[in-house]
Length: 563
Image 1 (tube, rainbow, N blue to C red):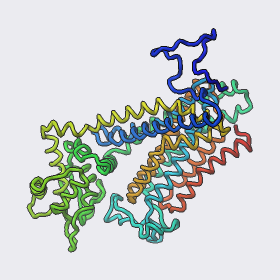
Image 2 (cartoon, one colour):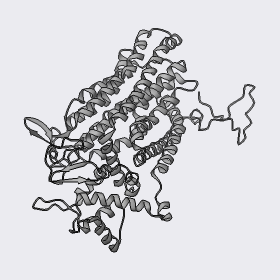
Image 3 (cartoon, helix red, strand yellow):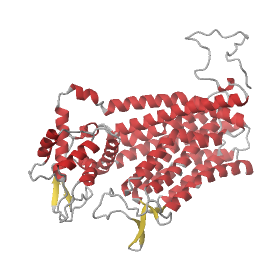
Image 4 (cartoon, rainbow, N blue to C red):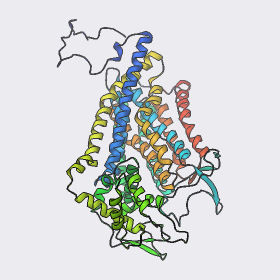
C-alpha cells in the first residue's frame, strides 16, 4: 500500500507534468506517501498535531465570533438560531469529509467516532466539570436538600453566588448544585425526541443485517432518507422553539449575561451595550425593588416596594447590576446601596475598561449624582451609564471610532476565518486518523471517539468550567442547558449529514453498537433532567458513562458481533 513516488502515474505510465497552476497532486500531504517505520509514525503524528492545532484555532475563532454576535443588535435572532449551528460545524465537517474517497465506507468509521465521541463527551466530561466548578454546600430546607444559594426573596433571578464553606476540603456527597428544572426538562425532552432518527436507521440495520454489502446499502437507503427527513424537521423545529423561548424578559436575561461575560473578557462597555441605548427603556413600566434587590421582571408585584426603578433600560440594568452590587457601599442601617466617587472610578476602570482623569471623574460623578447627595444609587447608576453610552456614540471622534471595531465586523471576520479553517483541515485530519489506525492496528472508531471531540469541543470544556465557577443557580442551569443543546444539534445537524451520506453515497449503516451507546447515554441524562439537586458524587457517576460507552461498544462488537 505504501509507496515513495509522490508523483501519481498517468494511465500510460508517464509522469504527470507539474506546473504552478496544475500541480497534479493533492492539496495536502498524502499520508500514504509518508515513510515507513518510526519515521513514518513521527511524520504522521507531526501532521496530526499541526492539523489539530489549526482546527482548535478555527473552533476558538468560531466561539469568539459567536460571543461577539451577542453584542450586536441582531443577538435576539442570532443567539437562538445561528450560534447552535456554528457550534456543530466542526463535528459535521469531520462527518461530511469522512464519507468521500475510494475507501469512504471505511473512512465513515472516523465520522461515526467523531459523532459518538462528541455526543458522549459533551454529556459527561463537561457535566462533571459544571458540578465541580459550581459546587456549593447542600443544606436541608423544609425537609428537602437544596443548594446554599441566596433566598428567592433576596435573589429572585437566581444570580446570587452560592456558598462553599471549605473550598479545599469539601465532601463530594454534601456538596453539589441546584438547578431550575423547568428549562432543563424541556431540553431533556428535546434531546430524547431527537434520538428518533437513530431508531429509524437502526430498524433497517437490524432488519437487513444478513444482506451482502451492496444489497445492505440499497435496503437501508429509504430508511436513511426518512431519518434525514426527521433530522431536518427536528432541526428546524428546535431553532424555532429557541426563538420562541428567548423572547421578552428571557431574551433580556440571556443578552445581559452575554454582555457581562464579554465585559469580563475585556471588551469595552461601549462596544457591548452601545446598540441597546436607543431601544426601549421601559419608561412606562416600573420594576419594583425591595431592599435594593430586583424582583423578577414580569412578576405580579403584589409586594409593596419601598422604591422603584423608573425609566431604566432593562438590558443595561441586568448587565451592570452585578457590578454595582460588587462594589457598592451597603449602609449598616439597611438603607439604599450606593457608589461613592472612588467606587465609581474602580467600576469604570476595572470593570468597564475606561480610565478617567481626576477632573473627568469629578464631572462624571456630578452627572450621575442627579439628586446631589454625594451618593449614586442603582437608579442613578443605570440612567447615568445609559447617558454615558449615548454621549460616547454622539461624539465625532474618528480616532476613537478606529480604535474600537464594530462587534458585527469583528464577528464576521472571526466566523469566516474559523469556518474556513475547519472546512479546509477537517478532511486531512480524517486521513491522518485513518492512517494512524492502519499503522497501530487500533480501529479508527476508537481513535476518532477519543481524539476528535477534544479537537472540536475542547474549548467548550474550559468555557463550561469557567462559567460554572460563577456558582449561581442561573449560570449552572444555562450551562447544563447548553450541553443538552449540543447533543440535540448532534442528533439533528451532524446525524443528518451522516444519514445524507448514507443515502447519496451508496454507503451502509453498520453502527448498531455505536448507536446503542449514544442513545443509552442520552436516556440516562434524560433521567437526570428531572433532578433538582445533584451532588458532586453524582457528577462523577455521570463521568463513568464515558469509559462505559467505549467498553460497551467493544463488547457489543466483539462479543455479540454487532459489526
